[in-house]
Structure formats: structure tokens, C-alpha cells
Length: 333
Image (cartoon, rainbow, N blue to C red):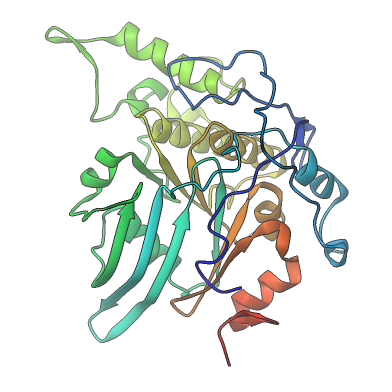
């Protein structure tokens, strides 16, 4: 299977989902994510979707038991077996900087209700591709389709208007401001000529509650007082506050400890389980296999494979990252 194959998302069966650093994550409702409404009791999973199968047996030496069982048990948003239009669909994307060609004929898709892990070695082109997705760079060639429609982005503001939010590795938070001020920075709500402080506080609480965040005492805490995991949570909450359809997370757990990584991975999974398309950039294969539905592998600026996570092993993904080929997958020799 090569890049661009397997374009129809799979469905999931009922039950809790486990993540690699803590207890199982409870099932969530199937409605689209609404940041103004906190989560309520879990609903019954939607009918019509087939259960997702378990991983190949030869992945046993690299995957934990919780992950293999979770693949067949997680109850999540599902497309009822119908063909689903990807939220973002890139075709033939090229990007050069002077004489250096960074991206070569890239094909990449991300679907609603799924986590697509974008993996690759340093220098493979991940950051450049994300900047093209987020409107920071304009591709030199190729087609950019959003929800089935061709679009052309001239700036990050254009991407945000479509519902694309990118959480960069540096988070871009203001440490001297509190949580509410960071969530609404540049998009403050007003009541007449004054700021609607109470309205912004309430929406901030609801958004964090909707992400099942219970580790923050007050939405008026300054960012400088928060842990790394809490800061990452605030950055993600800011991304989903504005009716987002696609959220791109650049190494969200890179500098976090075990417990904080668990919290962030739970939030990543919850975003997809509410119907958003999530693109996760990570070098941690355990995290990738724990939360992703698809894996897209870049090698020297080329998309060498985009496959279902359940169809590949840890070793195959590492081979794709390091050499661009693994058996029948990847570059044709």
C-alpha cells in the first residue's frame, strides 16, 4: 500500500479505551464536539459500524497488552460505514526554498473522527508540511482541498477561518496572562465597549470541562504557574474553542513526564472521538500506536505511506521513517 491508499475511515466497537500511562479512558458521546457544552453521560454507540480488528500478532513485542485490546474495544465517533470526505486532502504538494526542494509530490489526508499520526525523521519535511496546512507557507504546486473543496490559503488567518488550528511545539502562550486571557487572546468577547469577562470565564470553564480537565484550580491562574502538561492543555483548549474542524498538534508530549503525557494523550483521543480531524506529530512510537487511527510516514520530503495503524507494526513504521521502505510499503525500488 502506498501513500493515499485506504481512504475510508474504519468504525470502532463499544467499550473503554486504554492509554499507555494510566487507566482506561471512558467512552464518550457520539455527538460532534461542542466547546460550549460540557460532556454528559456516555450514549450508546451508533449502529452500523463494524468492529475494528486487533493488531497483527508480530507486533506483540513492541505493543503493550492494553493497546491491543483497546483497538477492538473503543467506542467512538464512527462514519456508519459510509465513504467519508477527508477534512483535508492534499494532492501533489511541492515546496522549495531557493534551490532546496523540501516537499516532493506530497499526498496527505486527514479524516473527521480520526487521529492521523505524521511521523518522520528530523529533516523529513514534517514542519514544512504543517506550515503549508496552516497557511504559513504557500505550496509551489499541487492541490489543497478542504472538505472536498479546493482552497488557497494566504495566511494563518485564512486557515483559522476554515476551522484549522495548529498547536505549535512552543505553544505560543503568554506566561504573564491567565488562562482566560490566553484562550481569548486577540479574539476577546465584548459587552458594549467593555470586555465580557464573566462570559469568557464561563466559556473557558466549559471548554476545559469538555476536555475533562480537572487539574486546574482556577481559570484565572497565570500560565507561569502551570505545569508543562497544563500549559499544553490550555494550548489545545484554545485550538478547539473556535469551532475547529482540524487540529494539528506538533509534538504535544515531547517535554512532558509520564503522568502529564497521559493527560495530553487522553485529550488528543477525545478530540477525535468528538468528530474532529486530528493530526499528531510525534517521534514517540508508543504514543503514535496508542492514539492514532492512521499513520503517514515522511522520508526525505516524500510521503512514502499512509496506512491504518492496525495494519502495520512498530518495526514497519520505523523502517519507513529510516529508509522509506518496508516490505511492500513505501518507495518502489
